[in-house]
Length: 267
Length: 169
Image (cartoon, rainbow over all chains, first blue to last red; front, side, top):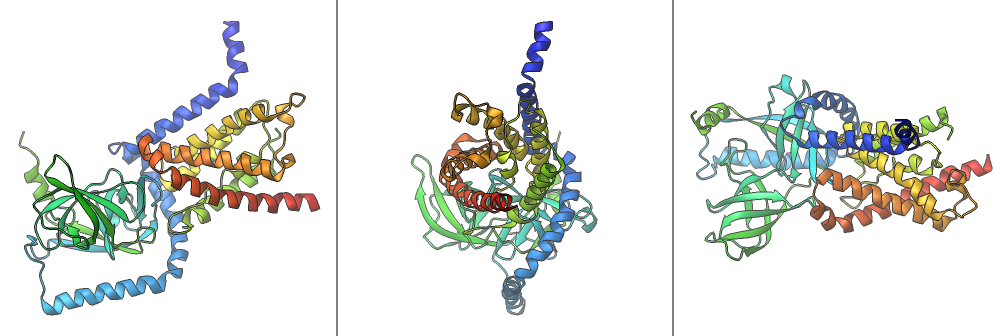
């Protein structure tokens, strides 16, 4: 017993080291566990407050750039409005999607599981699993909310899989980030029958109730057929600069509950 | 190791610099310098590292809260503080005690090697713990290496600034 106490006192800093590492690793595992993220709600609220003040300064410097992008987007929308252009086979009902404008208060792009904070939360009727789109593409999916902020799993996250489709045909596949450059993505499971070529535009597929069909994402930079499988492996360059996202829109699907209730199997 | 108020203030200043400024820097489109480790690296090794470990854990955790990374920075800081002792044990001359070795006494080249090794280790563990995927981190080694060089530049700059001032005062 005395030996044990002696050992413990001489190796005090080693034991403390092990203990602290264990605590840290438990925290990391918890933060990866999407069922338990509710415990981080206070953190979102706390760091959101400070990050918001900071991003206010940053936005000031990028005002012109954001303004230009918004003008472009606005022009695009006006054009659609006046020409009454509808994307073919969107399959959405009029008014099914509501767009809630928001600002990014904290953005990550150099990790493997990047998280974004935005300045709208539960009080702005934002709920988990809503989609978030930026000026030039998809940004991520809301993971959880506090009163005034939301935590968004970025599209630059190894766990995010997005249903995408080709602009000129209805073939769909899954887009995922490969964890390296913040504007390079890969698409898998796109059938090899699909007619594709380098430079083709990729849009959201609209198979889930999160994003409407037709949000442009990027262009194909190269592709190859997967040996042994009847599908393509495609590399994609995004339109969006994820290191500088700017203003975003949270996409609320009014019919989501209804759609999801039909998707869950009857017990 | 005397843990006076001055040290605590230096820790807080570097932590705030990291959270409020450096986390928002985006060099060459995708590199973010990690400078908050500097004060932990210049601390001399003490006989009892417990206090350093706890302080390191605490400051790492605050950075984690801001970057939404669970305990990645906390784990890395604690690990580096612990490994630091072994670096000095390997490099000390036989007549010296580890506790007597000071970073300020190292030559310029020795400093670059010391900071370089620890920044690389720090970044490697940050990306490893964050990704939880060894293969992915290996594919990121080039990125980590360039990030190390960029951070190293800041460390040397800060170090010259701080030690230069100490020498004149």
